[in-house]
Image (cartoon, rainbow, N blue to C red; front, side, top):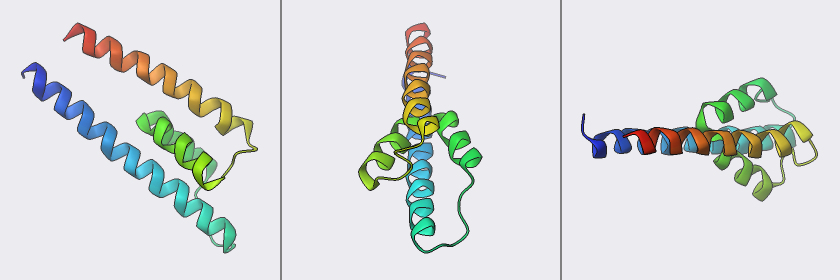
Length: 94
């Protein structure tokens, strides 16, 4: 595979997981308001770990969801920095 194809795949994946992260966070916020079945915190963290940390963090700040939970407000930025470093390493080796 060519360099551009690799980057296209990585960027497409990151866009998709970011969209999923935003949908999950917004859904969980709405479910909390309406006292419906919620998205487990473990699931939200897994989505973030799989690459949606930046989108989830920004979304949670914008909709003011879980902003008092240290697990999210410290964990998501830490994941984002780690993921950024991994993407940089992958990109620099191509």
